[in-house]
Length: 256
Ligand SMILES: N[C@@H](CCC(=O)N[C@@H](CS)C(=O)NCC(=O)O)C(=O)O
Image (cartoon, helix red, strand yellow):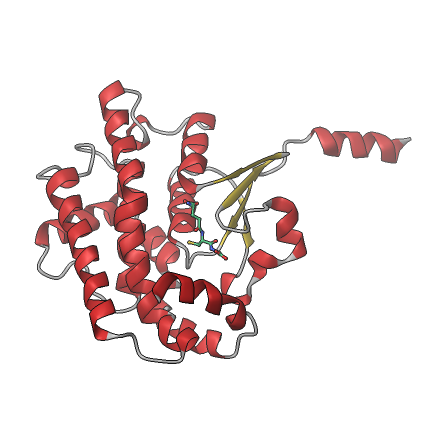
């Protein structure tokens, strides 16, 4: 009887939210940094992409999309980083500046979140994949013209971030940090992790990135980016990886 009652009490006790993450991934970092910066409790569940853990049976039960991040709040499972960020903002009493209640300021955050997928995210990811993974997966150097085109696309996105979204403001929405700034910085750090200095010749962007770091705390920023700053080691790890074969067709589709 007692065991049954204890079991029922256990069922009623609210479960800590679980976040399935690999911090090599930009969208995972934005969710991780936001949850930590806003002091939202969660359990970190590592899904090591370099070991192909997204294809495991266990992870397949959580998400059929087999991508991270994934949030599990009780029995509610949510994918897509920006949806997860908005869910966390609405569920927890976080400070207004993250996703302002003001109609137009919120629209500015959403404007950035809508733009970034096909621009800064797509372009930063491409440079990262070419630098970190192309040689080991394809077994050849990245053709010069492919790299030059990818870097030019990235530059174009960085220019748009500076000139359209940031302008002369402290942060994308104004005086305070919002989800837009977090989502932007994690994407920029992806090429930075493989040695592409995205801030070179962009003092305003560099000053903005320092403000983002200060706003969330340098220690947390460094913790969130620790693995990506060692991304060159990823090539080594992957060299001995049995999942490599699975990545080849994906890469050929992306880059041939
Ligand atoms: N739009 C999704 C992107 C998720 C995504 O592409 N995740 C990548 C890591 S950055 C992933 O899990 N890839 C594993 C795979 O494709 O096998 C989001 O914002 O959450």
